[in-house]
Image 1 (cartoon, rainbow, N blue to C red):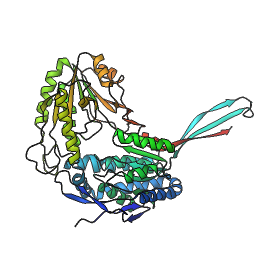
Image 2 (cartoon, rainbow, N blue to C red; image 1 turned 45 degrees about the vertical axis):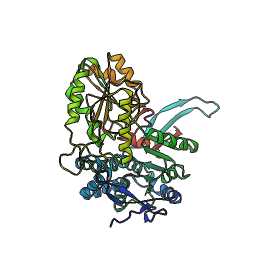
Image 3 (tube, helix red, strand yellow; image 1 turned 180 degrees about the vertical axis):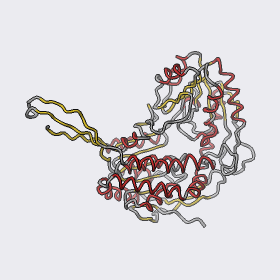
Image 4 (spheres, rainbow, N blue to C red; image 1 turned 90 degrees about the horizontal axis):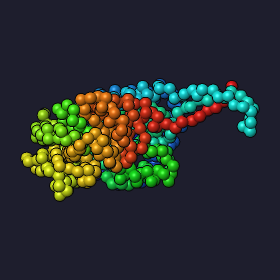
Length: 486
């Protein structure tokens, strides 16, 4: 019998007011565990506990905060196998992804921000000579810019990575001296409770970290509108982000928003097509396309259009779809039956809009249980189609041809989104020139890889603010100016 999970509020494991709900394995449809349903009052209590803990934690020596984050990473590594098995079961990620990209990255982020806690928070400003006037006597004035913690931060995390995404919020927030209320995605919250257990065992003081969950909107809404919350860090859909921003605006709360994406992948006529296909093909395989940074919108110059379609079709056809626990599986399930149905409805919409389905398009055979979607490639698309303009968040790639570089850039920028775009070209100088003209928070040149110290975030409806590396420490801090006469 599965032991029901309890909430983590004020350093105590607390029974939920509203019972529990089932967390479902997307591959088998079996119950992974029972997650707690927090009441609005319990979420407010979690925020109040974080508020009470903030003064002492914000004054804790950086070395002490660093030591706690380091110990937490040690404990996550100690229980690595069990953590990865849980992540795979509740998220549907393959074994390799659950181990290397979820748990390992989560622990690595705690290590990174253990070091981050020791980064300088003061920056000297050059002295300024002021003449005598209404503001006082003449003099030389020194100044210091000091980064201070924001306060209580609500971290609302995404379902596609129940370790790396929460770690990328919680670790830098704690490193800067903030306290947190974590509201995980309802589909796979149990991993975040394992993270909280590691932090508690590592010695994080009561109230500094709180975790609340719910299957519906109640917990998330309370975690945003609580008067004790100073900032909301959210990863998820643009539609939900807009609603959160409205509430934050009324309370003048800080926001960090990493929202939707429809990454344009420009393939120029001098590109290495095999390299481009290997990068674009990750949309089919990595998290089954459930990732906002995926190169889902392929814009290809006409001279290589046919060759790229041929290669992508072959690539999609050689990806094993199946149980993420099985050796050799590349494409696992999507998160839920509802999401599978949504993706399939987009594929059908693409057909009606005039797109040609050249790979996939039907539910994979031999999977009576589990929420599987075949890697799907839609050709003959135009930029006005909904399948090209809207985020599908699944293993679906759309291809739009273009004639010259100017048209390709215009098509890439003709989007509501601007998270990460990509350029493939054999001429690196040409690729960099194109990259500088793309309205996106990041651009990959001949790669889908990322530098994990580079700023991450979006233009337009893809978000507000930047994190990753030291930029995350800046995101979870306020700047204070201290001025004095020389």
